[in-house]
Image 1 (spheres, one colour):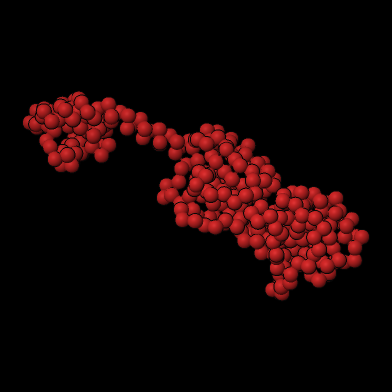
Image 2 (cartoon, helix red, strand yellow; image 1 turned 90 degrees about the vertical axis):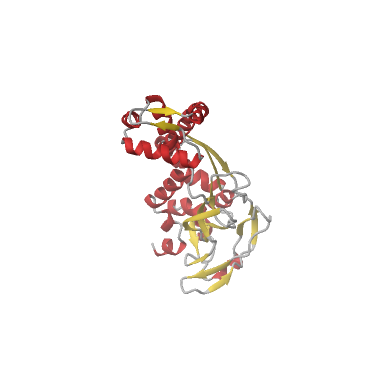
Amino acid sequence: MINQLECFVVSADTGSFSAAGRRLALTSAAVGKNVTKLEAQLGVRLFQRSTRKLTLTEAGERFLLEVRDGLASIKTAVNSLDCSEQHPSGSLKVSVGTHFGIRYLLPLLEEFLGRYPRIRPDWEFDNRKIDLIGERFDVAIGGGFELPYGVVARELAPSHIVLAASPAYLAAKPPFVEPEDLARGEGIRIRSPQTGRVRNLTLRDSQNRQASISLPERMTFNEPEACCQAAVIGLGVAVASLPNLLPYLESGRLLRVLPNWYAENGSLSLYFPTHKMLPAKTRVFVDFVIEKFREQHLSSRFDARIMFIK
């Protein structure tokens, strides 16, 4: 419709389809075809045609007055959209868990903004479950989300739960060899932000044996980072997701307890509204996070089974 309107306006200005075609870089036949289609859609003749020139009909004159300014506004709006697709811009509202966001996402921000300087991050670091659509988030990163209508998920990595303690704590204790040995440890557990309670978890190993976590609770926290730090200073055995514990395990400040055992905790995923045409700012952010997860091998580093093999 925009092309048809543009052909009509330029033809009225130049007085012929051939002159309009030269201005629009179209053939005169293409211009005439667009004008004819427009007349058919409107059900009215806009031009009186002769072999030498075009003359606006009375209806054509009225229509030209109505559409000329509007067409310019529409073209400006379309050009603005094209620009935003080529140069993504606007506020990007993201929800991500506090520790995960600060540890893994925030360090990527400088590079992301270097690529897309017109995007303005509006990020919420929180461990609560959110209503992605109702709260108008562009993207959420986490696990355990129910998938309501209108939301899709892109899995990034597994989110296994493991046990870890400081080298000093483990040196002072008899070895933890089997899950039942946990009964003589001191547990550092995380309360669910939704229920306020500690989750009951089932451990499994590479042979698919299963066991409950018989670890007495010495203390509980609502924040995974507090759980990790408490384990680092030797207060007990932390039970937390591998993404939260990973920096401490890779640095040697914590060691896996029962390293062949872990608990399933779903997946770490990107969640975003299911639009056929995502806004450019959302699309480039999703692609960027997936790219960085791949570059940093986070999917395998977050996998308790692979980490144990290494």
